[in-house]
Image (cartoon, rainbow, N blue to C red; front, side, top):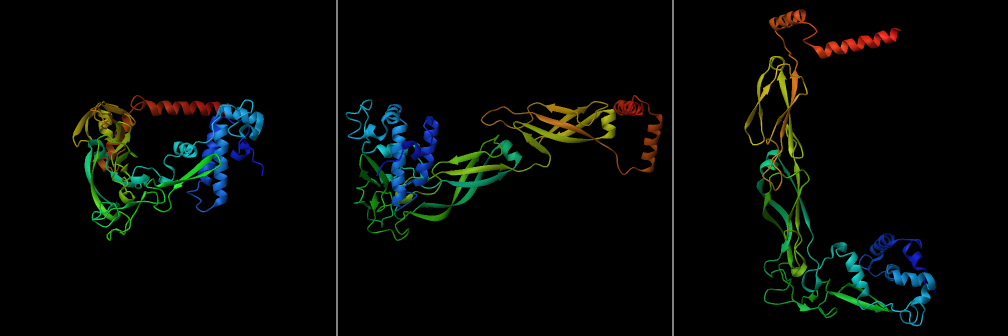
Length: 380
C-alpha cells in the first residue's frame, strides 16, 4: 500500500513554514494520541503517520530530500545509496517519545515526577472575595478547602501498613511501555499499573490501594498589600494528592475585590466623589474626606468651585504591590443643588437671583449667548 504524501498527512501545503508545520502536528497528535483513543487501532496508525511526517518535514535537510525524491529518499536504511539523502538517521528507540514529550510535556495532566513516572495530583482552584481595604493593607486569611490528600495509614503508598508495593512486571517499574514498529517506536502509559510503575498485592484498607483519601483541610493564606482584582496566589503542593506517592498538585487562589461604596480604583490610584453644599462651593471652605487606612484628610475648597473640580492628595491612594510606594487619592467635587427649601430659604434665593448679574454665572450666560447666535443664524 502506497504511503500518503507527508504534506497531505499533516494537512498543509508544500510552502508551509516551520510554525505551520508545528501547529498542524500539535492538533493532529492531540486528536489521535493513543491515550485519548484507547484500543483504537485506526487512531494509533494515524498517530504514527502524523509523527513520521512531522519528523521528516521539520528537518530542513530531510524535507529537501523528500521534496526531491519523495518517499524513495528514505527507503533502504535511512537513505543509504540515495543521492542527497546521506546522513539521515532513522528514529532512535525513543525518538517519538522525545518529540512528543518536548511538545506536550503536560498533555492531559500527565506530568511526571512520582515513583515510576506516576502522575502528579491535579491542581485546585479556590475563589476568594476581599474588600478594597484588605487589598490595600493585606491580610492573612484562613480557608478550608475540600481536597484529596495522601492516606495517613499507608503514607500514600496504597499498600497495607507493614507491606510495600512491588515493581510492575509489565513495565519493569518504568510506568510506561514501548512498542517498536518499523523504524520508530510508540510509548504509552502502562495499563497494568496505571503509570505508577508499581503494583499492590495487599492494598491499604483505608484507601483501597489508591494512596489518597478525600477530606477538608485548613490553610493559612497571606494576601500581600496592593493586590489587584483577578490576582492569583499559588500554594505549591496544596492541591490534590498524587496517586500512590506521586507529588501533589498546586492550589491556586483567585482574588476578586468587592465593590466599595465610596472609593473606586484605577491601578495604584483611588477616586472619590465628594458632594459639596452649594454654599461651600460658592463661598469656599473646607471639607473632610475618608482615606483607605481609616483616617481623614482635609481639603480646602476655593470660592466658586464647580462640579468636576478635582483635588489630588499625594500618597493617599492604594498600596503598590511589593513596594513601599502608594498611589494618590483623587477627590472630585460634585456641587449639590439645595432641596426641601423652607419659605425663608426660597425667598433668599429669589432675592439673590433678582440681585444677580452676568458675572455670578458666566458659563450659563455664555451658553445663552451662543444659543442666541445660533437662533439668529437660523432666522437669516
